[in-house]
Length: 341
Image 1: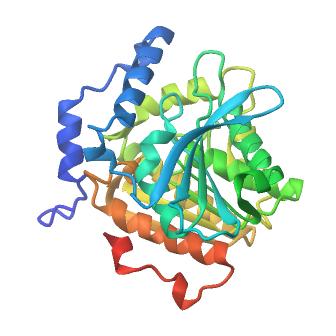
Image 2 (image 1 turned 120 degrees about the vertical axis):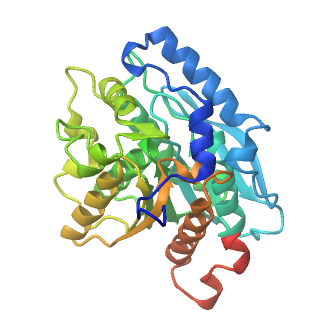
């Protein structure tokens, strides 16, 4: 926040990155342009050099790619486990994670936070490398990827070394939408999900998607513009599809869901999506804790090298999940001083 004017400003690192990186002309992007942009961005996000911005993985967690073989396709997942000796010999909780980005993104961009969760909960964190939005690939495809991997993990718990009765879903942005829908479907299917963590979520893809004050106020946010969101909406819900079916905010029944932690950066066009979804969960008597981070921008949890608020958010998420997945809020469940660093 600018002390002289009282106006919130993005962190200096974000402003510098924004000045150095020219935003594409989203409305004129062709399908080929989008693929080229996506591939270059994902290579950058997964590179060692870029870890100055995205953060280094926790050394106390082992990180690897694995495959989940479903009946009709094979999906890659990025798996984070506590280093040998840290998790003990018992089955561990599962955190099913979904990365953000929509038409761009990779699970590797979330290594910093996910490896931390694996090491410090401890838990097995499985991040879904879901199908990305493109011509012919709608959001419903990515939603199915998240849901199918969650079902697979819980049905094959022994193979993965997890305790299915201690499962949480989590995600950022588009991934938070997928996680929220998975929590809704889990209740209907009788699957036991104990927590959901929704970070700067997209919650509304209907005709009202842009009818929120934060959309106008932060239309040109350096990490997510409304122009980019309009392209996202076009790809996510092409003509002939039902946007309400992939909009958690418009779900008919949000009662009896896993307690939610909704994390909202204030300098985000989607900020009001998160705020309103937390309100609606409470309207249905589903516990929902809303935490706002003033001065943080969209996707801030994946940018700890340039957004100081990411560390506080990571500690809050760790504390919330530890309490929910352990089944009690004992003294041992409190965050250590190291978790705030």
